[in-house]
Image (cartoon, rainbow over the protein chains, first blue to last red):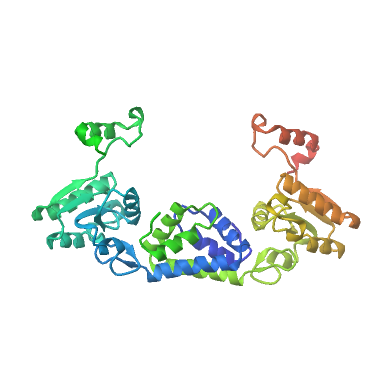
Length: 205
Length: 205
């Protein structure tokens, strides 16, 4: 693409660095901003700037926060002995929106994935082990995605916290609510048979 | 969506103002920026800021430019009597990339579209009529998209410049090169028969 302006070219090149945004989409977005009042670009620019520079991470659970201790960790009505281990902030938002979890979180910041160069040292595993060793945690729930990397990470953490003899669990895998059996994959269906639950329990939910 | 941080929420809300970017995509983009070094966000922010504040439009053709007269208008080897009327900057880039056009452009900045509240006064039509009335233009090529709005705009401009008795043409509509007849729509195929060209001419291209 040949640009008539260096300023435009720069803006498009930077925009195209974002994941899933190609050169053409970037050009469309930038030309849109040019058509809108300057104030819109100013608001976007200052929101991104202050987000990147002022955002803090909760010292306990590593969730994104505006203060040193996030709202969830600071809430006395949450059960701080029940810790749900997740990959990133979006998982916290997803679980929070269910309204089914009253414990606290621990955000790893990723999964162990040697192929992407992510080792245990790059994740917030050490601080999780510290939380467990301090005796404040009674149960850990693993809520990582059900992939090889997720399972590896679960197992690594499990091995680290095994000596402390606390309860560990993992979220249930199975047929989604409202899902039809014939469209489910074999592995999921197989697991949901192995890990079946007493019918009376399902009535209570 | 419930956000754990106001800064994050603001950044996502501003990002989601961009066309085709929903809340979820905006969150993904913003979290990506948070994972990258601060310098990347800084580069994006300053590129957008200077683009919006310093960019200029060519005083002759209204193309995006870093200087008062764009490279195309300032180029003495372009035929300044041959003016191609287009909707926006992307059309200029598309035509330039063909390497087939040696004239100059006039960017309207949109199409007449009453349904979107765009009238002739919102477009750069007056300055085009001025260019024609000054006698510097010998031929106008209409290269707007082939929609009702495009045709309306063509006709409006045509009526305005009719008194000056210059040559006007419109880019050819027809079967695309490499296209198969059976997949072409009837209107396009019909037009390509009515506007057929001498076979000898097609041999020269």
